[in-house]
Image (tube, rainbow, N blue to C red; front, side):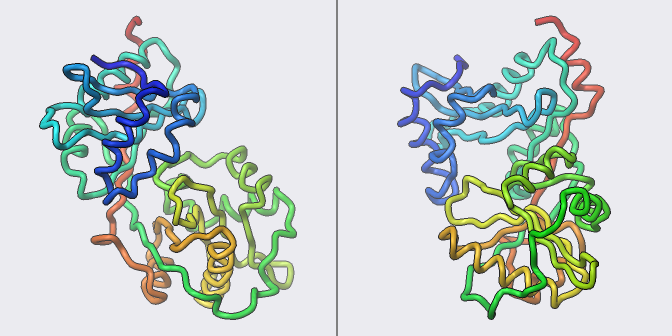
Length: 294
């Protein structure tokens, strides 16, 4: 049986979640939000026992994000992900949908195999880099500022190598959004941006996201003209990490030069580079699904 997760299922959901990422899974921090929002937080029961769950999230009214697929490894259950995926596809019948995407780690071979079988195609590989927070390298550079109007920021971001190499995606943790002016304005309104400015010229920019990973300061975009500017931003990230009680900085890297700077300054991969995969369901398959009657 598959049904939506309810508040009273929380204990069992967290029991399953505790088996993931050495007990450091983020599900505990999003459970209440997922139960309430307009997405589909669904679970699979066998013999009245919850053995797996996942989440369909509306990033926009027409853009779907699949996430949080978990199963009780001790149950020995098979095809949990496949059954939940088919449930979500049924839910989407008759709806106007523009995209269906998900991200995964390169080592999640079972999930990759399942979703490729369902028709998903890998559209992007990136390198996830992480760095333990250290003390600030010095004072904050006076060339870092938020004193910039939105349209100037927009023009710089839209011309950035980072955005182009990312195929115009912005990363809020492992949740991937297609870039839009409206999305950038969210960062601007929250103050989650910074530029490196000198002689009326912008030579660097950073966006960062409030994510559910309790120890992580997440950088969503970083564009720098040179290594010295990279160091200025890194120093500011140390400052923000300390301010928000974060122990590590994480960023997805799409371009070789930025990867070079990260490696030089002790950012590391979990296992290897090119470890973050972004998958998308082809529009033809979306049309076939959504054109079916409910």
